Structure formats: structure tokens, C-alpha cells
Image 1 (tube, rainbow, N blue to C red):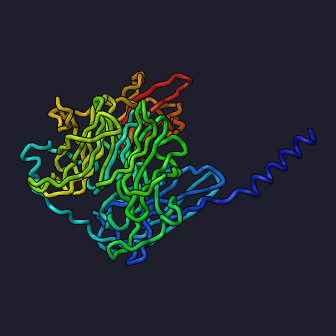
Image 2: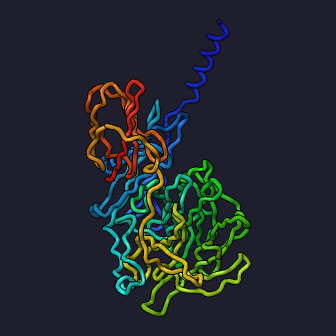
Image 3: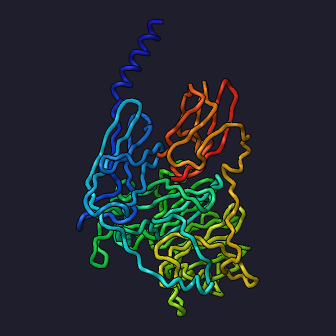
Length: 469
């Protein structure tokens, strides 16, 4: 018994000796070597948080006002400065674990919102493309790619384009949706400040401007894991792979055998994990209806449309033929299939005929009798096959308002344990309830679908909750 007691004491002393409070590193926004970072529009306010104990949460403050609480990696907040006055704002984040906290702060200049170029909307009025609704309102995005994940949710990567995106940006941002309509910001999953190798982190000169930027982001889900590719004319192509099998990462570099700007990863039953390095401003290699398609961009003479231009081949060996304008105004579109097998294309608008400039939209596509891609007459979104399709027994549990964006009131909660579970199955909040009516602040929850579970003396009651801020 004495030996056992001594062992416990030694372990306790050791655990105290290695404990340290959380540390934080600001990874976006950061200062640029030319004139500093001047934020206009939307940008990721992100930190790297580490501790000898698990991080329980990170709080984000702007001018000492709490604006977001993030419970999971990556620790990010989508900061849209369009409602801010021109001037200087102070950013501060605070990380918590079970025994300590730490802060980081930096002053950031804010300009007025970026004024986007107007368009004629000619492609819509001439019925070449449908009247597309932007996926992420009031946020400018370029080089958008979407994939369907193992959880039947959709994951979107892109570059927020309000901040001289061609010359410097923060890295790769990730969103999630279960319905292709409402998107939740997950965070900055790859950043120059935190994830880039030393050579990629180095600032260069490009067209006489300071340059360090990510271009041509694409996301893929292949054989149980997530990959993201990107590049630029100086660093070349980069491919990263999730180290956890989760779309949020963290991501590690995958060594490539070439150094071109455009990269896509492709997989089918015959050719697994073939890497294609596409020239001529190519966008993507993909397969539909038994044919292989290679997308690129082309400026069409009519209305000067910057469109998605696609060639067809019967095998990976080519030759690609029957090149055609697949998606008018699509530009550097990427193609993906939804949970029902329907083919979609992304677009961000990069010409005068587009419905908008540098926003994010999707268009359902179809294959005609000649194997060519064209815009589908049916633009119906697929049914939700994530948490909404789970066989959750609906109960007499009463909660309101639903959808909620500020607070939530739940009845019949006396002497129970209340859990809020996100769509990934993770408990984001757990409360011991004593009263029959419980009021919960949900203003810090991310937009999306949740499950409310009440455990009262072993009897479970569940109800679905929608949160939209």
C-alpha cells in the first residue's frame, strides 16, 4: 500500500511540472511587408491555440466585444468588416483549458467595403444560366470547390477575395452545408502563418507587388479522407491531406512529383489516386456517365463571357475532343456530384455577363445525348441526407423559437441533463437543468442543424433545432 501511495504522489508532482497555460498565435489577419494588412470586406480572424491540456474553447473579441466562441479546431471567426467604420480595430482572442488562459491582440486597419464591379446579368436575361442565388451572402469568394463528404454533408473551400486576393490572402477557408443552401463557416484550415513551409511562407514580388497568395483551391474526398490542392505561379502546386480523416484537418503536405500551378486529384475504379497537372489554365478532371471530362477556361466571343470550357474523352489516355462551353460565365468552375448523384458546377462570376462578381453560386448540370455538358432545366436541390434523415424519435419536447438565433426556451426540463449535439455528433453544450423551463443562449453557436437531447432518469427525449444567426 505504501508503494501505491508513493506512486500516486510522484505522478501528481510530474503532472504539475509539465502543465503550462494555453498559448495563442495570431495567424490571420497578419501584417504584410508593404503597407501592413488593410482589411476590407470579409476575412478569417484565426488563431493557433496549444496547451498541455485539451483546449476547451477560444473566445474572439473585436474592440473588447465578444463576437464568437469556438469550441473546436480550427479556431476561427469569419469577420466581415462591411459594417465597420474606417479606422483601427483591436482584435483579441482568449483560449481556455481546465486550468488557465492566455490572450493575443493586434490592431488592424479597416477600410470601407470593397466596391465590386457591376455586371449586365446578360447570361441570366438571355437564359443561358438560371437566376443564381449566392451561397454565402455578403462574402466575396474566388476559386470555389465543393465535395460531398462521408457524412453526406457538403464541404466548400475558397479564397476570400476582398483583400487584394491575387497578391496576398490568408490561406484556405472551409464551409459546411447539409442542404447546399445554408453554409456554416468552419474556419481557416491552412494558413501561410501556421502551416506553410519556410519557402512557401517567403514573400516574393509579382507584377511589382508584394506576393504571397493561394490560388485555385480544390477539395476532394477520396477513400475515407480529405485532400485539398492549391498553388500559385511562384510556389507551384501543393497537395495537403487531412491527418485526422476529418474535413477540418489538421492537414499535412503530400509530396508531388511536379511543380505546376494547376492540380487536381482524380480517382476511379481503374486509376486510383492519379495526379494530373493541368496546363492551359485547366480546372479539373472528372468523370460523368462513363466519360472523362477535362475542364478549362475560355473567353467566349459572344458577350465576352469567361466560361467553363470542357473536353470529352473515352479514357484517361484521351484524346479530349468536342470541346464546348459547358457553363457560361463559369470561368474556373469545379464539378461535383451531390448525394443523389446529380452533377453540379461552382461559379464565382468573373465577367460582365455574369449575375454578380466574385460571389459563390452553384448550377446543376446534365449530359446531353452527345455527351456534352450543359445547364440542367431542373435546378432542384437534393434532399437532406444528413442529420435530418436520421431516425430520431420526435417527442413531446417543446422548444422555441425554432429556428433560433439568440436564445432558446425549452420546457419540461426539470431534473434532467440537456445536451446540444452538432451535426457531426459532437456535444457542444451540456447543462444540468433543475427547473421545468430552461433558457439557453445560442447566439454563439454556428449556423446549422443541431439535436437537443434531454436525459431525465434514463428516459431520452430528442428534438431537432435549426440555428441561423
